[in-house]
Amino acid sequence: MGENTCRRAAERVMNLLELEFARCRVDVFLPEGAARQIVYLHAEREEAKAVWQSLTGPRPILAAISRIDWNRDLSPWPAEKAFRGGEDFAGEAGAHLARLTGQIIPHVERELPAQPVFRGLAGYSLAGLFAVWALYQTDVFDGAASMSGSLWFDGFSQYARERSICRVPRRLYLSLGDREKNTKSQRMAAVERCTLEVARSLEEKGAAPFFENRPGGHFQDVTERIVRGVNYLTVESGG
Image (cartoon, rainbow, N blue to C red; front, side, top):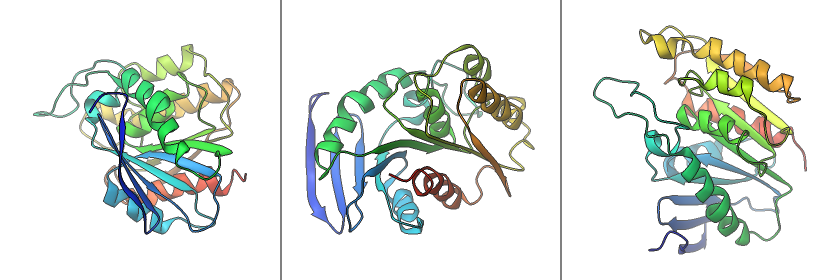
């Protein structure tokens, strides 16, 4: 399958549209009624399904992107691995973002009955870093949600301070677990400090990030934290 092609794997069944791309899969969860908000979430299908089922208020369209290499596709530049026995970060987020904005989003939104009036990008951990970093690269997103985002990533807080964002997001959500900073890794222990630094940098650029600490460490209540972020983007944004 070529890089620019997309195969529809299934028709709308039980409000689910499945799309296969050359480098990823996208599961699009569609609400019963008309929806004009869409959130792109990097998450596996079952995790995204759990998020979808837990959303409150009028549900948006949720497009879950999976089957990617997180360390390669979501890291903005090369960096040393975070865990012993893991893999280094390849720094190919730019290529993945180009596929997302140039191929995935157009294909997904051609399948919708109406053009969205709000488009958000959300993610957990490294995908949360990607969601914030994308604001510095493209103006296609109206909002971003970073849950337990890897904003400790080497050099990112300085990058966020020195660079301009492409547009001021309508909604911006940041969250962390209150024990995430209590890790033995010196790099990751800086996550709270770095997240607050990034939030301040975004405020200086005109954004209004909403930040909250949630109970627990990095791997606790993942679905609930993602739900809170997606709800903040869509329930509060109107449209």
